[in-house]
Image 1 (tube, one colour):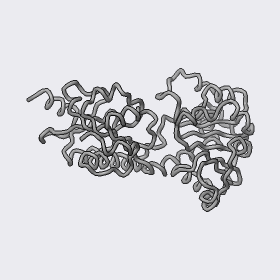
Image 2: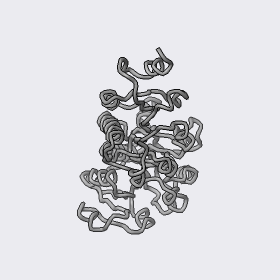
Image 3: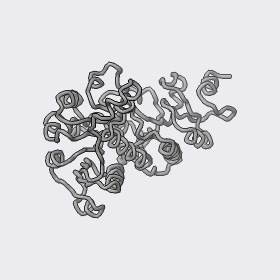
Image 4: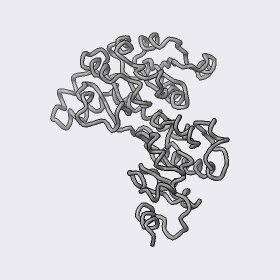
Length: 339
């Protein structure tokens, strides 16, 4: 048995078929996606580290979930044809280098939309109802004291600001509207499209920040949106307001947020994403009061994981068979892609 075959068996549950093409999967995905790959002749390399020198020359596809995918990593995979993003965000990938090398990048929009929107609303409830603090109070024998402290709020009748009106922003807005909230939207989408959803567009972000009881972020991370929520933006929010981020960590200046929370400039925040992930246990941000954090799990429901794993696997198969994928991130590469 060759070294290649031994490594194939070591990292894959699928044995007994002729090795022709490999898909590197550095972070775990749902088994349904792996089964689709295997049924179409791919050997899934289920390992966090870069494949060995011998195997790396055989890798034609990668399923990428999080972290960085640099030019130097691409250079170690000389026959890589496609990077399939298990999700929507592509900010961790060197898209320019991939395009120059003829590597197709695809992602899976709208496959986790409902899950992320529900997570944003769950965080909204957790902040208004002080669920984390309530849990701690019971466990720390502060049951009666906490019960009469007050400060819990109803969501009905409050105003939620949605920043970004893509699929997740739209779904979050619809859920909030169904809860009886007034929803204001800041987006590049037309006022007509937003008004057709029964919502109100606010052209000016500062104006939206001033008017809302809570603000939820649903835009991609780009150079233009980096630290969109900075010290100045936080100073515009009412003292009772909450900030929620289930999109990308770079949208918020975390140093400014820490200061705003410690100085009671805003009432609280809930974050599922951070500037550096995983967030270190000693990160100063974790010392902030009235902060709820979750480990980038908004898109990690069973349904979303199945949807994304299936979409990435099917997209890889389409690309390697010469068919245009459903969601192509760098369309300019298609005619000169690696074959």
